[in-house]
Amino acid sequence: MGIFRWNKNMQYKGEWENSELSGYGFLIKENIRHIGYFSHNYKQGFGASFYYEKYAILGKWEKDVIEGISVLIILADLEQSNNDDTKDNFKIVKTSNGEIVENNLDEDEINEYKSSQEYNNMILLYKNKIYPDFLHMMESNNVEESESNNEDYSE
Image 1 (cartoon, rainbow, N blue to C red):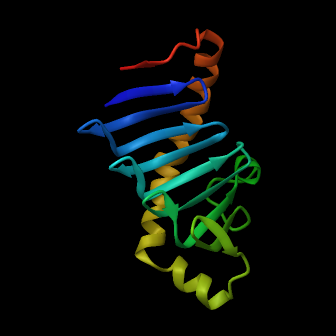
Image 2 (cartoon, helix red, strand yellow; image 1 turned 120 degrees about the horizontal axis):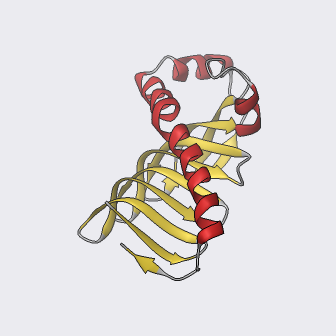
């Protein structure tokens, strides 16, 4: 476990192996916060990237790129709704090369994906670990920013 800060706008906090981001961690670059799994310095496996505290994309990453069917989450709606009712704030989308390429999937495709074990595992991980960690990270970053001397460091 450790923290590396390149500058005040870019840092990683999490698991390392052989001086590489590897395992579960938090990567902050400007206003984008990624929480999830890493391997050999890449986002790898399940994770979520939070953009400007407004929305997140949840899915499976392969060498820093999200591919396949993913979940777009509108954070403002999530905070205002019952945490168990994800119908309106979780939208199933297709991604390719890290970009949303289709956000109007047919109902059969959505239902098939929602009934998959991968989807259920990902949603549980998001609700029980990633989203609470995101809230904690936002809270602790606000404290760190007010106390920061802006020096680069590593631990």
